[in-house]
Length: 223
Image (cartoon, rainbow, N blue to C red):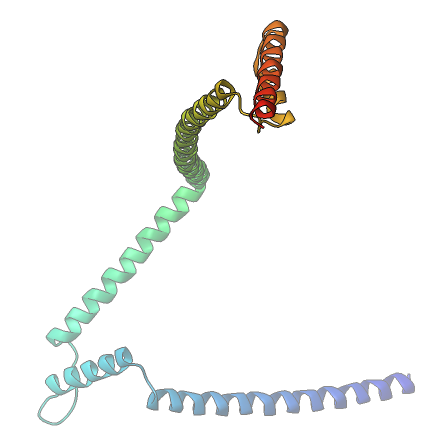
């Protein structure tokens, strides 16, 4: 029992210390709050200053001869009216909100919101798709343009090549007709390959050989 009493005493002492500390703390916080308030009063925003100036003006308007302020002037009436209206408005909105909650209108709203977001998503997707299609179309157009130009170029080049070949063939023929000796074996090969059927090729080969020997003979005779 004695021990228990001692323990209780100690506990009380600790609690007392705690309390005093708490009191000190609260006092300090109060002082600090007051200081901050003073600072705020010195460093107020424009709207606060305006409000204060308005109040001072009203006070000036509604002071009696002996310097006391009387309530019930025009400004005060206006203020009261405004305050009352605000209060009523707030009350009304609160009521509406409460009713909505009880009726489960919030659910409906949420549903609508979800649908809205879905539709927005869909439109966005559509826009994206359109953009893609547009770019794809442009790319397609570019590709086709390139292809057409390439084809055109190919055809032109083919034509030119054909012309060149014709000239080449003409030159060859002229050379052959002259029976010029300066024809190399590869040239002869080219000529052989150019004939479609073998007979033709062989004939031309024989002709060439005859012409070739004739030319050599004439050269020998000239000497």
